[in-house]
Each structure stands twice: as structure tokens, then as C-alpha cells.
Length: 229
Image 1: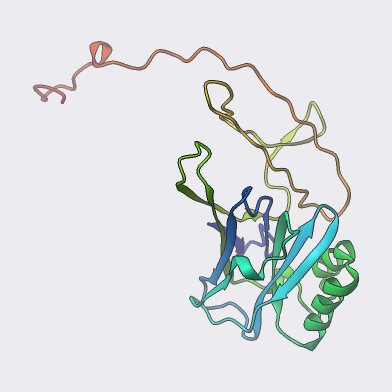
Image 2: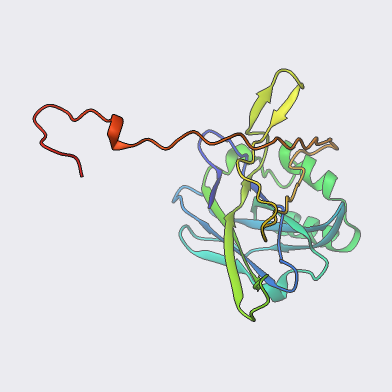
């Protein structure tokens, strides 16, 4: 699970879910507040996206710390491909903006207003409670044996939290393992967490030969120890 919010404002009260339902499967989003200082009367707003279009939006009731909030598969729009979650005050102004998202869209404006604190004073830096979010996905086993495969991943921190690449003048995120061939496959999901349009470049690198594994043969036994198991 990912920390969202926090005393240092690192993620500015938001989290992103680039992949929801697997093919032929289901997804559930689960949240809870894990800090007793989370502002009273606040909750979680979740916007579901189908590409650049809003597929739907949900606003939780006011949440108490440590009380879970779940969005089951039946409440996730059929066309939703990804989602973004925000810590928000639960009041009439925010509820009206959620209704606008459901009817006319406008996620970009909603996002910018959230970041600037225009949503009923919903300044991300004032929402200092920690929120945890996870997406649980289940679907048919790819080997066709009739079984079900279940997995889960943390909601990704909002904002740019990766390494600045001076050479390419951008931010770099490393995917350490991509499996292809021999019955294996990998699928990459990319979601823009920046409030403006941006580009992404994907570079695949050839796997390097692994270094030999360390052995006890070259290991020196510390003095006073007879043997190492």
C-alpha cells in the first residue's frame, strides 16, 4: 500500500491506479486513513478514467481514522481503465464537483483546482493524514486451467517522485524485470499523474549476464566461530 498525504506533503494527498480489471476479471479498491490527525469531515474522492475521459466518480462519506472504505467491482464503471484517488473535505461544494465529473467530465480542471486548494479549501497540504490505498485484481488463470489468479498493488504516489535524469531532462522510473518468451509475458501500464499533458519514452534494455552467486568458498569465517551453516 502507498502512503498518501503525510506531514511533508510528499504525495500531496493523492494516489493513482493505472490498471484496474484484468481481462475477464474484477477489481476492488480499498482505502483507509491511518493517522488520527486526519481532518474531521474529510474523506476520499475517486475519479475513474477511460483514457482522457471521465468514466465516473465516487465520494466516500466522512471517514474516521482506521475505518476502511471499499469500492467493489460492481461500483467501478465498466469502461474504467484507471483511477485517481484524492483526500477531500466531504461537503456540498466537493459533492457538486463530483457530480459535475459524472455528468460533463473535466478532470483536468478538477485536478488543478484540487492542487491549488480551490475545492472548498481542500489544500492538499492541509490534509495531513495518511491514506493507504490498494487495488485488488482477480481474473482467469492465463494457463487456461479454469483457476483464478488474484494479485494486488499499492496506489502509486501522486506527483513526480522518481529520479531526475539530467541527460534526457526528464524523470526516470526503472522497471527491474520484464519477462518475455518461454511462456512468460509482461504488460506495462502507464498513467500520467501530472496535471498537464506530458510525454513518455519507453526504453527496453538487453538483459545483462548475471553475476555469479556468492559462495561460502570465498567467505572468511570470523574469528571465534567454528563454522558457518
